[in-house]
Amino acid sequence: MSINSTFKVDHLNIDKYLPKVPPEPIGCFRNVILHGGLAWVSGQGPIHPDGYLERGKVGVNITAETARMHARLVGLNILSALRLVIGDLEQVERVIKLQGLVNASPDFERHSFVIDGASELMKEVFGERGVHARTSFGVSSLPNNITVEIDGVFALRQEQ
Image (cartoon, rainbow, N blue to C red; front, top):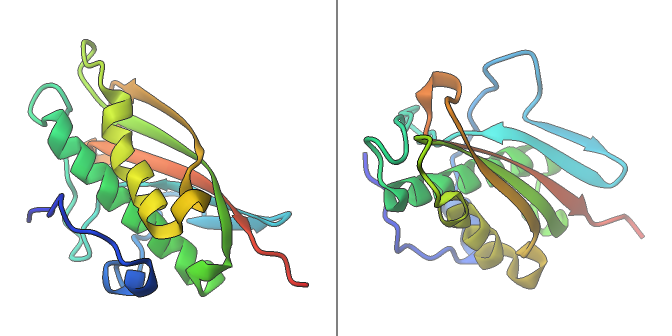
């Protein structure tokens, strides 16, 4: 399965790009926890709607450009998980932070470039509200040998 790196997300029609159901957690945790006006989204991976996992090590058998597309897919999975819990992405007041892990070779240096795939998606969907704080770094492995894992924190609109 391939990912089209050039597709643009129409924030008004974001649902047509999101998986109907987000991937299920693979451990004893929830995809999203709501607390104190924030939505904390657990680490999501590059899983296609049909369950196909993007696997590999960036800098070995996956290019930085391909991993960046994987990060964009992870961003869609984050939004899908969030939408399932809050009902409507219009409830997002601001993307606070993303943290991205890249399954990379020890000499790989383009972690920020990879995670920009998800960061740019957030800006496309939410505009300036989608520009966030971020951490990105490389790790020696990720669950199921996935290429990228990203979690996030979102501020939600408060009822008036």
